[in-house]
Amino acid sequence: MELAKKILRESLPILIIAAFGAIIAGIIVKDISIYMNILPGILILAPAIMSMTGSILGMFNSRITSAVHDGEVRVDSFKNPILKENIIALIVIILIISIVLGILAHFFCIWLGYQSLGILTFVMVVLLTNALSYFFMVLISLLVIFLSIKKKKDPDDIIFPIATVATDIGSMFFLLLIIKVIVVLLK
Image (cartoon, rainbow, N blue to C red):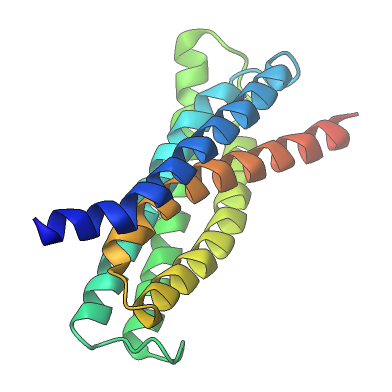
């Protein structure tokens, strides 16, 4: 019963914060939908980017917390070959998935009868959104993981809810930012 109490103590406040964060992400998605007339098909990207960002960052966080638990990554230094290799793998995955997602968004727009922004534009939107999102999300993740270890908290109980809401908010914020830049360039 002590373990259950510990998990509740560490996780419940974070999960409540995550619920508020999810609402903020929803508000940002609503703002993205305003641009549907100007950039048809852009709304196809929002859930795909959120899901992809969460999945890839979840994988990264899982690998890092496991390495921390195993003593392979120390919390007093960002200089670590395992951390570096995971970040390199993350960059390669982001590049590949962004290209695939951009291409799929183009073909789904055509299939569904929407006007496509074109493969190159979709790929650039996804790539720029992901580059900005992951840069900030990895920094947030590493800080949360390292701080939770220093405070003698289980990083697994803390990082996943925080990372989920941070990726939802961050990916939608950066998608909205990129969309606004495209709209300005189209004028």
